[in-house]
Length: 205
Image (cartoon, rainbow, N blue to C red; front, top):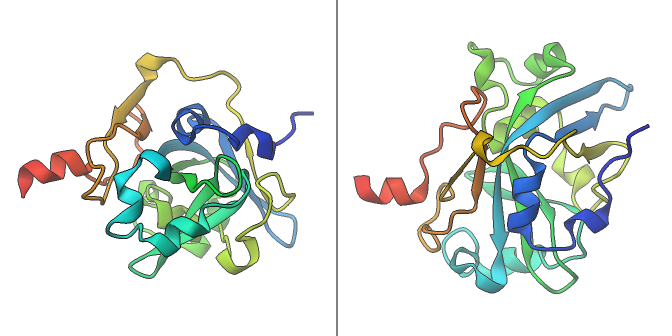
């Protein structure tokens, strides 16, 4: 039987973790035992020791401190009142994480639609807050728990996606650190978020 990714998987550079999580599976087991899951098709890395985004804008000092916990813990930050799911990386005292930005639904689509009714099914989990709502994840119950807990965990992809199947861009929604190529996408996947990379957005301003 395949085991969930252990905390030790995340005790390293979050850029590498974000790339390697593509194609993996996020699983949430509801209290009644129903499984809701999705294939990870978009991630972003945040590595505060070398990341200007951590000290500016939405990544102020207090929020960065929340990421400086032991590797492999579920964390959340809030944007416009909506929770975004991330997992801590690197050793205690170093603020770093990977944000899960989009999923391709697998098990439990019907239940996901009751959590988050949408007209277009592709809008169900194609964004970081959307997937939290669709999977019925309750931040207050999950924050700080181990990434390999029975209720919420991750499985590695069966095979690491080859480079030709991965698109790399700047991250979404930041001003500082907007040049860093730390957003990873499964190329051509319909469930990727519609967010515009910050570097591209700058050209439109």
